[in-house]
Image (cartoon, rainbow, N blue to C red; front, side, top):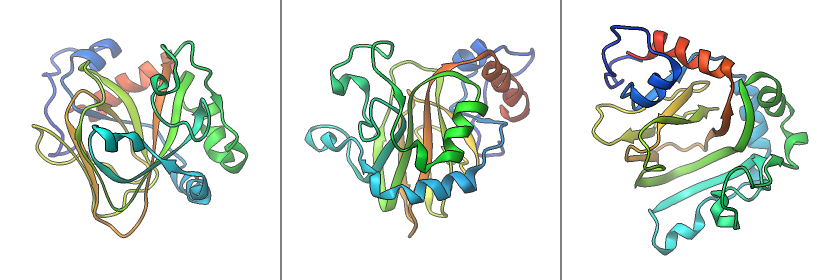
Length: 223
């Protein structure tokens, strides 16, 4: 992934999926998968009227952010973009996730995740919009040190920057890149462009095909 990529453990032997996820030491891993990002971006833009403020409750004691909006493709409801605990559920398994009512307006995106992307099951599958001059202050998303959520850039205007604490450079997002992130690392985001930034974040249950994708991607990009 170039000079900006932090160094993982030395690859003196071939690492399996669990080792890559839990022991590689990578702050991120680019997945070697083609994404129909331009058509998916057009669909996201066409749905902007449905996006809601994300984590709006953070104004009462959480980390600060501005211009952060979201919409669920798969979830409890299109507008219920927060963690399941915010809606009274205790586990992912008991949460009534399903394809939301927006899928008729994003057929390419729906087809890709329903038929192509190698997941067994989805939890939250969300569009994430960061508006011009928007920002997300430093925070982490997990207390467990491992590669976990997948963040797909549908576009990535010049001036959009994601920084992870203690790592040189920035996460190397570009339009069409799918990157697995280490959510326990402190990270922050800013959109210093004049354009909306659209990403998709994927949570769910991985398949064996996905595990092979991670292993192949590590061999190609995990240096």
